[in-house]
Amino acid sequence: MRTWLPPYRVELRLDLIISERFADAFRAAGLKGLSGFAPVEVLRVRRARGASKGKGVPLPRYLAVTVTFGSALVDEAQSHILRPGPFDCDYCRAVGTDGINGFTLDPKSWNGDDIFEPRGLPSVRVVSERLARLVTEHGMTNVELIPTERYVWDPLRRFTGPTDESPPSRACSVWAPCSA
Image (cartoon, rainbow, N blue to C red):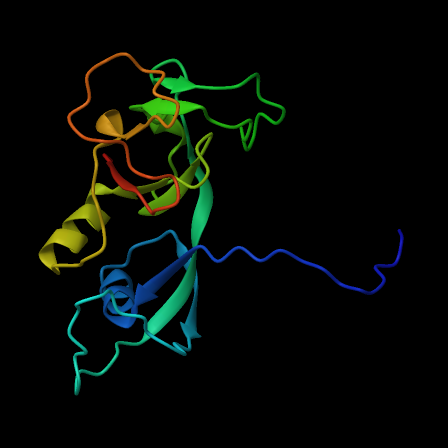
């Protein structure tokens, strides 16, 4: 084995920042699929133009978490996903994606996690019905729940079928409920 020598260069991937309120509700419900729960220090808040300054309103505490990868496998035969080529790795299935017009998970491959990135769709976060209910019941914000069969990401406009709304940006966190 070779020794790693300076300069040490790494790329860090920060998965998700959640509020302490969400973390408390997640833990109290006994949900699975997040790890880390490390405190985040907010150095500065940039408000949108025209937004009120909110003086006297304390900033909530935030935590950095990592979302589980691979708790379920995308069912390629039942999904409408455009791929640029065959998979190089059958486990992660990270060959890339040119577009998505709904997808399905192989129910036999799901281990019961309540939030995860499925094998075959990294960066897409899927949640269980239990987590979807928690979000609704607790009035959580900045979360969009989209049924997996209606999830559309089509930056190249390759799907000819009609869509009700413009596709979500790949850069944002998109959550889709997964039935148990």
